[in-house]
Image (cartoon, rainbow, N blue to C red):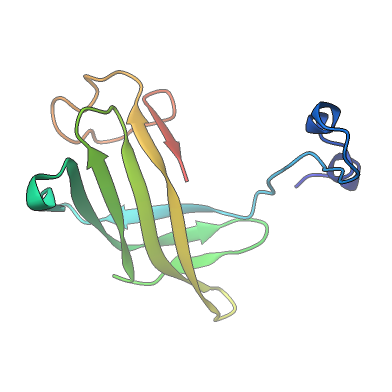
Length: 141
């Protein structure tokens, strides 16, 4: 978690415009890390009407959530990751939606959008690997 001093740091972008609206450096706070159990089989939805986007629906079976702000589980079969592959590109757009149930009983609907892109384009050539890390792929949500 960032300290209050960092939160008050002026943005370097202020030097580009002489306007009264001053901005602060954007930042993120770590809330939790999750571990998803994904279904073995994905549903491929072809490109409609000859389009170039292919949708892959990757069901989320469950999982765990742990962190300084939230801990709990991913509700069983509460969502999926809807990936969009644009033919001719080296990445997939991610759109995951699922429900967390916190240890103190609250349900939270989560939608995470991001990208997935193998750093070495041959990484997925032999099918789905047993594991992957940030050394293998860029994966941001």
